[in-house]
Length: 271
Ligand code: PAF
Image (tube, rainbow, N blue to C red):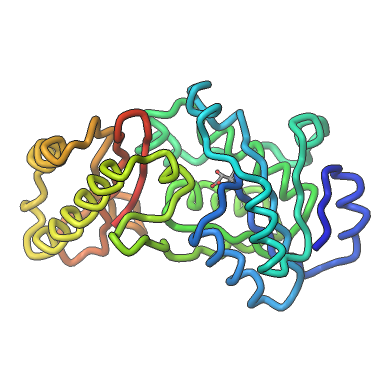
């Protein structure tokens, strides 16, 4: 496993490697990341993992400061997984060069998390665009827990004709149903229990919405989630996961998208 802190050294190393699968992360690695890395290793090329907590995608300074970090533990895990390359840029290293492609921000960026986290997706695309420019990976491996992020990165790649294929991996969950997330590390035991109740409740709800679309009553759901102990619900919405429009019939393939707070910790999921 080779670790790079400088883009020039990294680029020199990977210059002639055509089959790189890239897993971008902000560290605080968990089972979800492990599944992305395993997927990447199936491609039989080289796997490159980046760890960088990108300040530009946080709309609140406190959230950036409180984002869980544990580089030592992450590196031990990555070594065990036999990852080929790790890129650990500094802010200067990653933001101090001119990128070829302009960011393309699809209009879906204005919905869901885009409404409540101003500038978030622009920050995500800024950094991902830079990584793609430097690494030129054959694949970029993303998790669909961050469905909107993955969709917007895909749109950017297509619009800018970037020669990288997006590989989407399904959400990995803890035994209690909560999606694996670095932010879970900030939850107390009780908050983790409330998160589990929330997800289980939504799964049951999905079953009843599948029977009849009008069974979806967001006000009712919000009230019940608050009773479980959820602090705040940013949004709870149904979308057809292909067309990204509101489903008109229960035969459509829809998902429930949610962002909610447990005290100051914001979690997202799609079910
Ligand atoms: O999903 C994440 O961890 C981040 O948004 C990403 C893709 C690494 C960009 O900073």
